Length: 261
Image 1 (cartoon, rainbow, N blue to C red):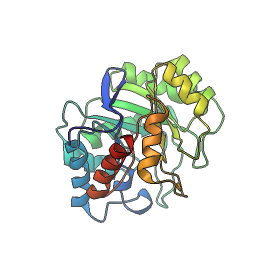
Image 2 (image 1 turned 120 degrees about the vertical axis):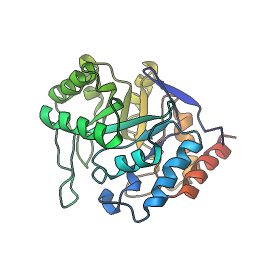
Image 3 (image 1 turned 90 degrees about the vertical axis):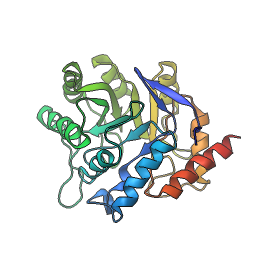
C-alpha cells in the first residue's frame, strides 16, 4: 500500500507521514519486559514501514529499552525516509513505576541510552516528558528543557518537543529553543487542548495525541472514525496509534482510508 491517510507533515526539516506508529504496545505487560511474541513484534515494525509509515514513536523507558531494541533489530540500518521520535524525563523501577528523572545528568544519560539502544548517532526528535500519570502539572520546565537544548546544540538531537504539558509550559519551552511538536492526551471525547492545537497549527508546530482512542476507558466510537476525526480536526495533528498485531495495523490504516472517503 502506497497511500496512507492524512498525507504528510514537516517537523523542522523532516517530512513524516501524518499516520505514524507508536511502539509502546510492543513491550510486555504494563510496558515492562519483552513481548510474548518477539517475531510478531518485529513483523509489526516491518509492516509499518512496508505500509509507508515514516514516523515511529518510542522511548527508552518502554521495557525499559525493549521497544528501542526491537526497532533496531527490525529496521536498522534505517531507511532514509524513516524518522524516530523518543521521549526522556522518566525511567522505570522494578515495580513497573515511572519515576521522574529530569535532572540535567538524568536527561543526558537518557539521551545517550536512546542513541545506544536505537543504534543512532543523532536522534531525530526528542520530547521532554513532563507531568505524571494524572496529566500535566504546573511548574517551570526551564532547567530540564535547557539541558535538551544544549544537547541539540551539541549535535545529539535534531529537533525538540514537549509532552504532557500545559499551554504555558509550551510557551516557556519556545522561549528557550524551537520546538516542532507537542504530544499530549487528546481524543474525540477528551478535548482540553482545542485552543492549543489551533495556536500550534498557526505556528506550523505538530500536535501528536496520545491515547487517541481513549485511555483506560476506550472511546464509544469506532476506532477508524475516531482516528479519521483527528486527522480532519487539524492539519498539524499526527497520529501514532499502537498495536502489537500486523492485521490490526493494516485494519487501522484501511479503516481510516475508508472513513476519509
